[in-house]
Length: 424
Image (tube, rainbow, N blue to C red; front, side, top):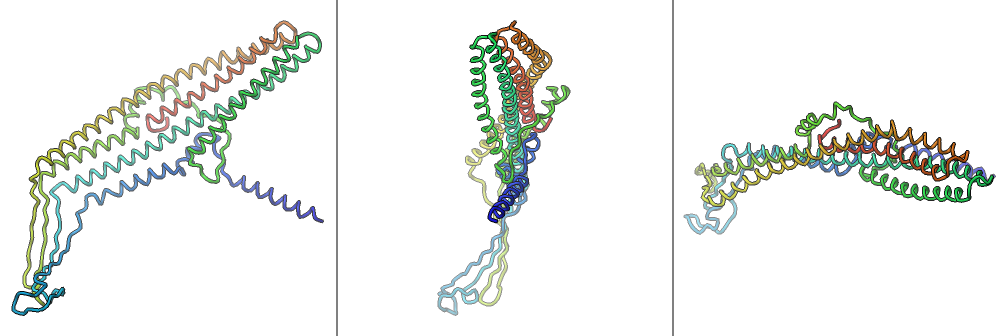
């Protein structure tokens, strides 16, 4: 009777393992599923969004009036003067006089609005930085996914070639057994297979490293496992790759340029606020004077600060001017860099498309015909074994060139999408 409980426990454990595997979310069959997951769960992206929200929340407080001040002044609290001399006291009704004052600072006209505008521009810059963070993260995911797909394709083609080399080895062994081929052919087939197995081990290591990098880019979310990459995205139509149209989208949508534009606006408002500091701020207040148990009088107060430190003020104005110049120059440099990256990516994408066309229409069909002819010729003794191995290498290279050209197109598309700030 003892095996039954053990069997039941094994069944329950297996069921629990299956349930756990089913509970895990499999992502990675296509790049879109990775992007959705990263947008939802990546911690760095979440941090940038929170910072952008914090900067947006700062706008209202930036233009608010400062809090009013309340003051109490106890005059002659030692009670050493006056007709009713008494010992020292801190009660308002037991001192010589008590003055209550409420004061409010009022910035000069326009200063509050400028501070609010500066905070709004800084909030827009924070939003741009968050968008740029997402654009960079999405670009890294797309690039890494494309490499992951390439490694999987190379593994698949390498394993197909292992099967082909096994077939060649059997043919060479059969011909050697019949005295139709030298033993060197059998040894060479085995050597070629061993070398290919070593290459596959290297590719498998690269595949595991790429998978680990992808999980890191996703933020290593719990309950998620990485599926094998199944497909690349379809390539955009030639009309979508017009250079002038892409440059226009770049200038309008790129998040780095948007952040730079917001910094320029903040610098312009900061310069205007610096020049507005030439005018004084105002303090107004009202006070009541209590003598013993009665209010004896009321006072109104009006103060202004006198802007006498002109050298310091002029230095701040020069600083604001240079900060604005720096912000404008930085945006110009960013625009030039992104335009150059876009042009390079477009040229590389068109080159990869030409390579794909050549590989799919000419190179791969020719390599397949060459291999078939070499196999048939070797079986009849008309072609030596070196020609068969060369044909085998050619077909493997043609397949790898084809998938590499498609992967390069995907990677260059990712470059273009990062430059224009949106999907094609």
